[in-house]
Figure 1 (tube, helix red, strand yellow):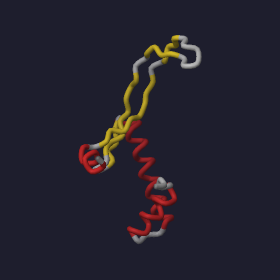
Figure 2 (cartoon, rainbow, N blue to C red; figure 1 turned 30 degrees about the horizontal axis):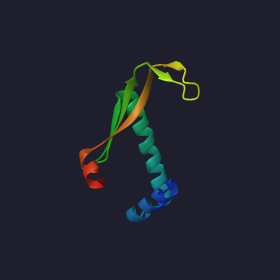
Figure 3 (cartoon, rainbow, N blue to C red; figure 1 turned 135 degrees about the horizontal axis):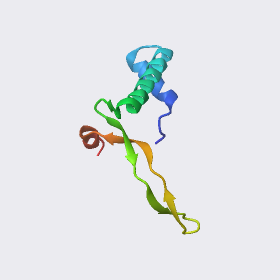
Length: 93
């Protein structure tokens, strides 16, 4: 089974909503921009009934270079994670 592309998602939403593809694409781009700015500003953004994007700090740690086995220091950094909601887990599994 092939994965949906961005174009296919836009086409499917346009068909279901009976709206032009251009309008759906603009809406999704605005939604994406809003999600990114909210995660940056407040640390999380809910995706209704699916889950939420969460900004987290990852602590510095020691790791290994897989090629040489040499110990290396991995610096602390900020990452974005996705936490799946319970109803979504239950529906998929």
